[in-house]
Length: 136
View 1: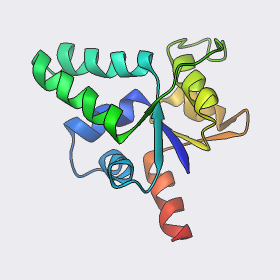
View 2: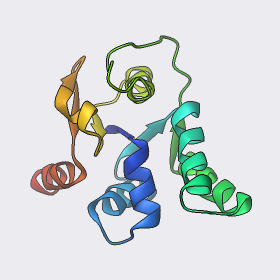
View 3: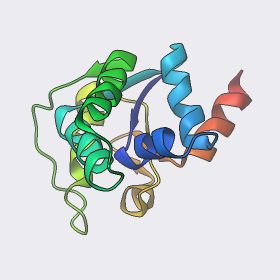
């Protein structure tokens, strides 16, 4: 299953261990899901770790590198203008479209309100985990 994790899921996975976002990220580390991302969300991830949480540059670099190793980085070929309330969310949609993702896992209200976008389901981490457990 190809999955794009929104930046807020990655941040929560690294900052608040033990929660659903970390459990989803661990599935990528274990190879149970095919994680995809793109350069803009990766840069946002690193910027938030540094600016909001005070991580030093080396630690930020290690975290970003780990995400890159856990999945694959796609380079979106088309721009999306879907989430007018928060255009940054469009970058997640672009990554998902380019990766041909099955699911976007997000805690972002604007993305979750879409529910599905171009056949790609958008789920909260807890809902994604419940679905994965149900199919095992």
